[in-house]
Structure formats: structure tokens, C-alpha cells
Image (cartoon, rainbow, N blue to C red; front, side, top):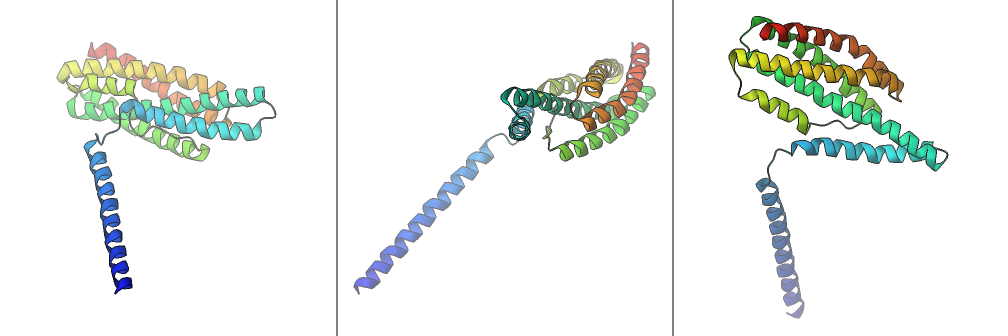
Length: 219
């Protein structure tokens, strides 16, 4: 009878333990659901950059001969990764704005330009993702903060006002793109990243010319 009582106590303890464990999981799950499911916009940039910095630190310390060499190698690799992060978000922004224009633009020429944006930037974004995967660089999964605020600005515009605001924002975005890709095409440490930037530049310059022309017309 004594061993029977012991085994009953053990069973009761096990059941209580399992129940409390399940309750812990349940509470943790409920807390996760209570949090906002969409990540903070700036977090996507921070998460990407933190992961890149950790990876770069490990790689650079393996390759460099001394502390100065390690630091210099890290800085160059971080510049490459930052270019990729910024370019990925900028590319996503331009596709997002173009999709908006397909719905909202009044001018057929603006819609035509938007169609070109979706096609060209869609292609460049895919190439950028493949390059990042090959180089083990983490990219943001959503627009970084400053790009999200550009998209937010356009949400309430419509008709001719939308066309003007859209072309103005596309012009500003492409000026930044051209400058950023020009720098990367000569200064990126990784030859494949330099080559990607150089290959994409003519398309971006072409887009910039279109935005200059259409922005004048829209105004």
C-alpha cells in the first residue's frame, strides 16, 4: 500500500508540473499575441544591421593579421552591408509607391512610368536578394523608417495632387539612389557588390531622367 501511495503522489506531482508548464506556455503565447504583430519599422533595419555586424566581426577576426587590419576590414564590410540594406529598402519603397500609382494616378504617363518601376525595380530587388544571400548579408524585411514615412505621405493624396507628389518623391528617391550606387560601384570592397552597383546604375539614371521630365509635366 505504501508504494501505491508513493506512485499516486508522483503521478499527482507530474500532473501538477505538466499543468503549470502548459500554463506558462499559454501565458507566453498570449503575451506574444497581445504584442503588435507588425514589427516596428526601424527594427527591421536594426535587426539586419546587428546580424550583419556580428557576422562581419567573426569573419574579419578570422582574416585579419592584426587589430588595425581587423578594424579596417570590418569597417569596409560594414559599409558594403549598409549599402545593401539601404538599397533593398529603397527598392522596396519604389515598387510600393509604383503600386500605389497604378491605383491612384490620374495621368496615363505616370501610370506607364509606375509600370516601368515595378518591372525594373522588381528585377533589381531580386538580384539584390540573391547577392545578399550569396554574401550572407541580412536585408530588412520591411521598409526602414525613413522610407516608410515617404510611403505614408502619399497615402492620402489622389488624382493630380497624387501625380505631382508621386513624381516629386520618385525624383528625390532616384537622386539618392544614383549617388549611393555611384559610390558603391567604385568604393565597395566586395567586387560582386561593385559589379551589381555598376550594372544597376544605367537603369537608375534612366529612371531619374524620366522623373525629371514627368515632374515638369505634372507641375
